Image (cartoon, one colour):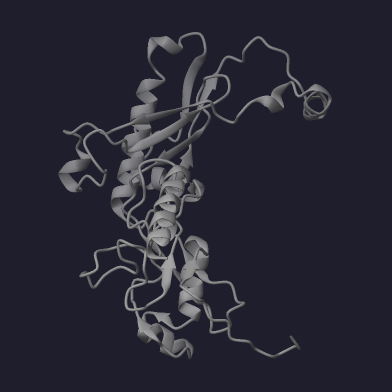
Length: 294
């Protein structure tokens, strides 16, 4: 093809869009599929008015917490030596995973947090919070809220399809999330203060919601917050009859024919777990749906 020329390619059966939680809404919006008013403002002719395209972006919000410990009586291996050991015979510290186990916990039913907020978890045994254990079985220093209420969005910066989109994670925009992080830190603080950790953990460094003002605690959390890179929700699934959502239960784009979306953007809510296994399940289900249709 010569520079500047275009060619139209037509799908023989259907288009499978798997652009990811950021890329999928970006492609849809650039194609005129999304919020009609916002598309017209950008100068993009709207083809299909689906206001939820790019909305509902959700991720697991996390922060760092720390304890002081008595160092184990083992020699320290520097990075150069560790790399040499790995390259020579696949031994040494580089054979270790970042974490071997994960702690999950759930807020008690009578927790004060539920006097103000509805429980967002998926069921009575579903966890609210997570903390990975480090390779030495101690706290790894990251702590994650699995059930955030906050929602963000993916929008277009301009009508130029090569411009990066505007990504608003919406972290901590709902008051439940800050309250839940506070509650979660108290749970893990209590866990690591038990006698089982005597001789190893010597103290809690924080951030400690019980020794800081609400303003001080919230500033620390907002300054240090990050995500577990588990985004979902920007092309959410809903029932065929619902006016909300982007795809139906068969992953078909609502209001269109011959387009199916297969990636984590279709999850209407974030999982109370890491998302990779669920994406595998989604892909397997999509394969069955596509095979049956074809």
